[in-house]
Length: 115
Image (spheres, rainbow, N blue to C red):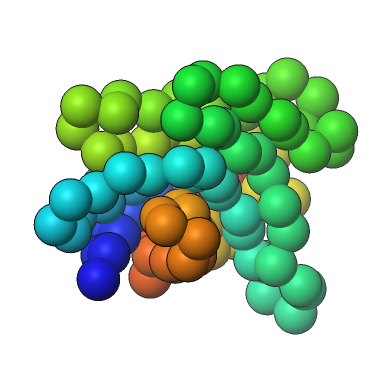
């Protein structure tokens, strides 16, 4: 069983930055892809970015370079650096990982951006 714990969310003003973390725990972890999604009120969950075990990244085009995904394989932790935040970035942010062909989700962390 894999458990994910996201952290780093909070309330910020437009233009500020946040760094989200996603810590994975479980026995014998070998994490393949790590990804971040978000879900705003009344909207569907939206893909943001994914990073492979080897460090290859793919981003949603809508982010336009404001967000950066990274990971520390030794710590089984993923990160999402979010810069130039906008009020429309307000959402619950979720990480997920693929381990042995199964996908696991964290509980989410709230990000609120005020104008």
